[in-house]
Length: 78
Image (tube, rainbow, N blue to C red; front, top):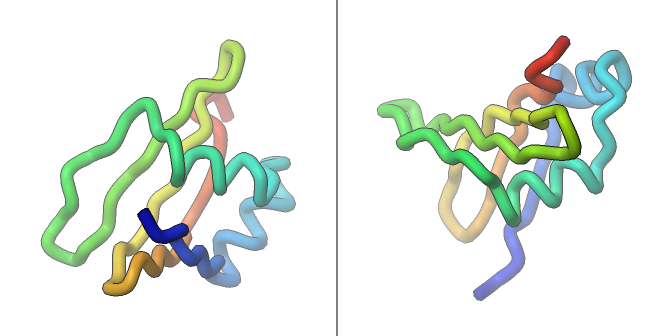
């Protein structure tokens, strides 16, 4: 399986800093989510991954050729 290419929006980058989410957190959530919502009409989807007692979430837009645009990121307890 080809590796997914990830692009971060400016909003996602700002939220990464504000919410202390690393690129590694995002990569792990994209590659191994513990929850995946169904894909909506606008091709967006929510992915979640449990980390200790927290849950990392990201909202992505799926494009062709394994391209994923990260729209926003955070932790469910914030």
